[in-house]
Length: 302
Image (cartoon, rainbow, N blue to C red; front, side):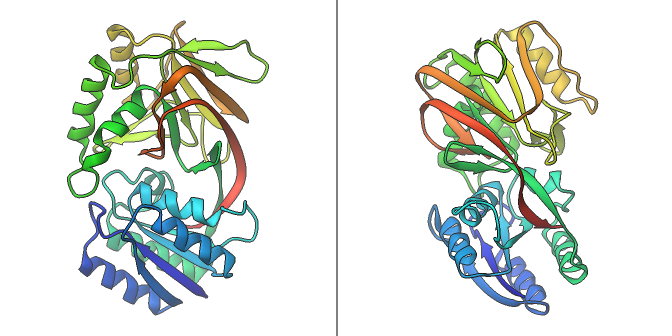
């Protein structure tokens, strides 16, 4: 088996020693090449080349941003005969890895990956596609994307849950691009005006430190997309949704909430550009995005 290990040395939990241990362990079972990323888009380029060169496995060692780049690189030419994906968490949240049951500790995750390689254990996962961008766990326009854009310049070793919480409060009271209304377009439904839109590919949607955040509990890697779109962001409604989202059995209700768990596609439009994020990385302002569920898009060793 030919494999490439893609390491983001700037990710929160990656270290030179951990990288060496991981590389040594993988090299005992596969023919391995190690690449350390040193610019945005580097992981995507490496994974794209791996897919076109017939590599068997690409392992992403970093946070969700690194995983997202690798996935977009693997699927540059679309799903099909592409390398399998392995993930060894190295970021602050690692939502995709945790949703797959991969250990947060890099050493434990390495043992899991080696066991999967030896036993040929894998699963296929459905992914989301937002226009030209693939996403593994979520994407959004509005408030959450404002938060992501606000903390983007402090990514890497400085990122933590407290930073995101502070940014969320700041963006709530002083949204960087204003509070432009959004319109969601769901097949078979009339267009609905909302204030922010979260589109999920799995549940939990994110983590607040060790606590999972649940918005669409009926959404998974084996279903369509989840949509969570409040029609109001008044303080009572926000408080209620936050409280419900932190419960293990989250049951979001309310006449002012648009929520679906298994959508094949959904569109979101805005009259003025609003911030847009994919897997926790800012993409830039948009006035229109179409989200599509793609079943069985990728094989992951777990």
